[in-house]
Image (cartoon, rainbow, N blue to C red; front, side, top):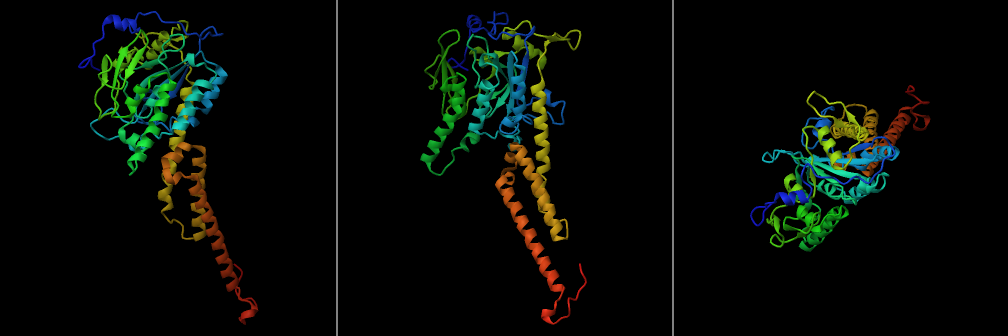
Length: 430
């Protein structure tokens, strides 16, 4: 960030934006009928600590792919659990990155890149904010890592709720970047430049709508989505920023490169007052700081892990466990299904009818998996197309019928019969 060259924010400005550790925090408007408020965590992706209990390697994005892991199927039971428990604070933890942290290697698994469906993601966000029974003012988002299309989720929640309580938090080591340009361009590639231009505007419109839904400026959203969109900002008040497309129009330049997509550091987010940094060495300590910044002081605590460790907040982890179970189940199912194309290439049974039965069983297993998990469908691509699978099963059925007819005709021929003058029905019964 630069003031033409470098951004310098004074202590008074930082305090005005409430960045100081000792600031007074507005109380959350949600009043709890319980003796102690219930804090409920909803994972938008699975971070390294959460994966440590499973069989996953602690890679950058296993368990956090948008469109497969972060998918409506993962949240059906979670949303029902939230409706039943009616928590006082809903914390969405975003840990979803299309790239690992070793940028120079270029060894990112493209199969793990976001599988974006704007309409589906829009419905999911609305379910979170409007159908859980928890008011939007009693929800917040914690950005732990965000690279790629998950940026749309990050900015679907506001900086502050209606009472001025912080609603957006960020880890000190978080990344905050939009999609790689090829990921954006795939939505509007065409040989016709006019078609490309129209599709680009359509994609951008569907995308920056998430920023506007969260109360953020259109220019901020477009700078994450379009390389040619530069950005600057001016302070208008304690919690109000004015954004500009041109780098020289605002007081502070955030992006003056028209050939690259913008990314923001946690320091920049904090200096601008968009998010609050969470202090603490562990996940539990950071969650405790988040709850304190929300103005909740009478939360339940658990015993410290060691003599020097602080007490930490008790957070309902049912949503985390349900999410982990879903991710493990669909990925295990996908691993099994990914072997089916190879198995279909092999003729393992010399008997044609038994071979057809074997293939039928493989396709039926694939059909059940794809109907149960849309994530498996998407990851398998054409092989996971339900109409294609049904067509293959229909072909196998026709082949079985044809083979049965052939065998019946052969049996009839072997049985002889008087019409051909070859005896009275020769041949032994099969």
